[in-house]
Length: 293
Image (cartoon, rainbow, N blue to C red; front, top):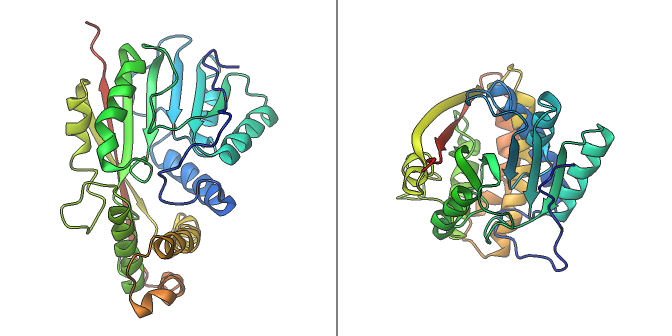
């Protein structure tokens, strides 16, 4: 097991996640998208400098643990752990690690909106993917300072973020996208100036640099999920589950909805099945180094 053990708290922590973190449907959605994203990036550590021998790695807000398990499998000399606020996802991730006999992978319950329960200078790589839906806007500076604190001098922090599900030629899909952005803003997340997107990708490099990381580098990845592509099926199910969970949350907080929004998810799925459906999804990976002095 990883030397950085993550104990589960005695009492549940309040979630700031846009969706219900204990939803089994959300677990399925995250598993599908995690595999797709890692593949599009060329592997869990693709593009990063080589890690030192016997490195310690952490994934923050790890969900069902796919990225951690990929690292543990492809780099057996690396000790890698993941933390997430969802006990259900952490239990599932630990079960997967046991079933795969990955003794260098471990998971625990922890909220990334709170001080991280690790000593200073603990990890050679701190990874965080798509946490805009977890972190309210005001939490970002403190979160990144915590990431810097637990990163070892000379170690790397990497953030991967996107602007919702990209862009399509489907009117219903675009309405779902707009509703998702409005929901995020209503919950106090994102950096959008007008609510038309998440607004995280233009500012993430500045945020990481402001937190004290140096040698900032960025790389854009893109997935084509148009009709007939390999990724279409995953994005179809992503739309199916994500819209249902998003509408549930929108109604829960009393977000204003148009009359047609009750059926927009069904219409989006119908339009995605058209032969001329086109969709592109892009996401940005940003990483920087903690100074040695």
